[in-house]
Image (cartoon, rainbow, N blue to C red; front, side):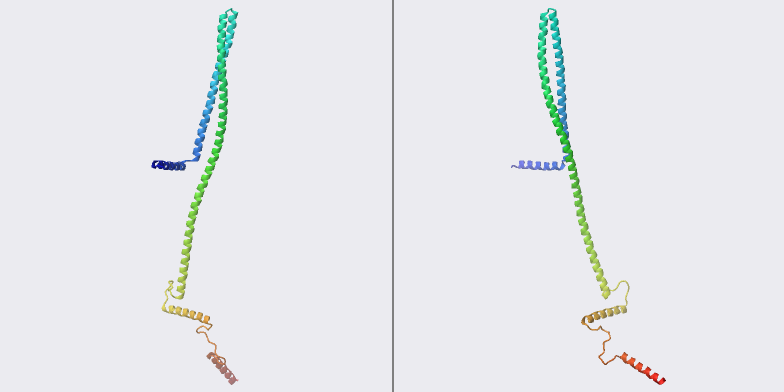
Length: 265
């Protein structure tokens, strides 16, 4: 294949694509229907012209028949007047008129046959045009419905893409929210443990030290609980037979009160 042949093929293919994209099937169908109507009108005009020509010939044949009748009458009148020569001339003219009438009748018969053919062709073409019109309207309706479906599908596709973007945005927002919550929880924990100062109000050194002591006591208490030992600062149980200082003081007070009661009595 030569270069010019390839270029011609490429140009034709591109032109076909452009025409296909620009062509609207509904407009093409309407144009085809208009052309068929023009053809149908042409056939109808042909039938009308055929009928008109046949009637002109029929009128001419009627005049020839009248002339034949008149020539017969003239031939009788000539014979009645003993003018055989005139009667012979009238009969010759009659014969010519009869021949002419036969030719006209043949033409009329042929025209009637052509008229019947044209009428049948007109009826068939009319039926085809009507069927094409119905099919055309159905195809146009189907094309319009398919075009609407394509538009709806494209719209739904755009909505799906937008919803996908929205879903990603929501997911990012949720992730950021979780991160902020985690950061806020970490700050609260650090503030509670005293690592960070509470920004809600100033603390003096005493409060800070007390908070640290409380925190350390809590840690020691939890550690002792894990070890199964009493927490630091809790009163320890005395060995059997030993009492605490408070128990001894209570016992001495009870004894003094008893001696005072005896002396008074």
